Image (cartoon, rainbow, N blue to C red; front, side, top):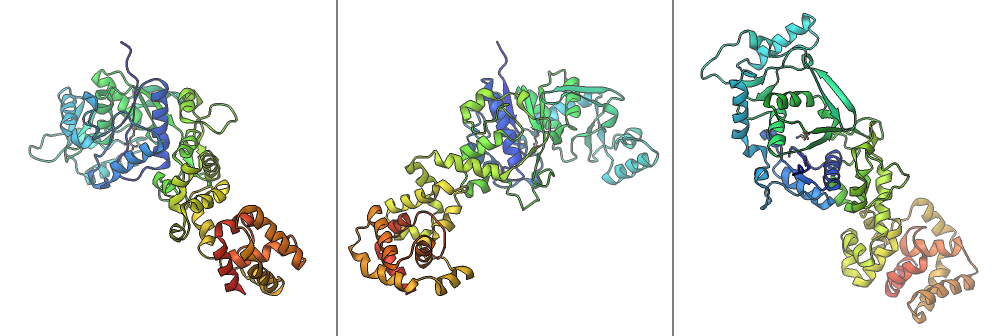
Length: 476
Ligand code: GLU
């Protein structure tokens, strides 16, 4: 029987779903689906102190929202047998069992050294000119069992051994074991380190491809050596290149000038399809000029050959453009149910449902983020405060008095639909002998407090006759 292809996204629940994490999850997902395989979420929660209370739920919920649907994830009721426990915190005894095997075989040893002792030894080696000092040297030299004393378990790395793999993006990568210290597999508190638990889990969960960020390249030789010791077939490793910001530096979660969490984009009114499409092109290319791809298309096209070897730039304008594109594909009903929440609250009580829908339609063509609707539509609640320049023009140059007088005298007989409203504005212009800017600008400023916006007749229609009268009175 052919082996099932399995990929996993293995976040630590120490933070919210980040653009980089979402991209990693997406590429794992696309490849799994491309090959008819399975996509799994495993939670690497061994750093108990750093775990967020909702970290796990936040990651899973936002991935599902994006459409990166896992086949198996922690807590799912029908998880496959070997995927029943997908939280590392539930698997401590499993790791200890495997560590024990390596201890018995002499491939690992107990380390009783304190952090300070190791630091001193490390420094001494550095001072003596050792290129890659190993923390463990002292520990090996003075190695004695200390019954009852706390210890960690370290892997004994072999001397001068080339460890290599054929990376799905980078080709052959080789690291010499002399560059790797005798790393800790199990900490003094009995909890495994990332490198150890990761390998045991990938093996037991029958993971065939490990797709992750390039910051993990230095971990791969450590992990590969474990596969060798246990006599296990290693998965294919694929290391994605970094995502950089406008400043050409790696996106850092600490940089608050860039929104980096998926939940924030979600709150700002991005469609999941738009983010899905955008993320797929962040380090992967179908080698065409096209920018718009649906999920099925991406699943068909995605392979690691299309993954970039250089870093990819996070281009917020492109994300906004993509979101605007997808917003236009929605039906009127869909657009309303997605964007409704961004309408100013007062609009919900002041206008009929049909008018609310039309207000959304009025602005939809220009929206990049749903949240922009809040500010744009606020003129239906109350006019904006004019800018100084606008106020100067309005008070000193425009025929405000005449315009408002004409409106108040004639508006009652106007049928409140689009064509009669257009005709009404025209008649007003003719009567007062003003046109173009001199006609439209004062009316816009008087009723809405801003010079530009969607078609004036549409604005008037939606604002409603009564409100037009009220605002005209307030300005005259
Ligand atoms: N928990 C690791 C991380 O969040 C997973 C790395 C891996 O995929 O092996 O970076």
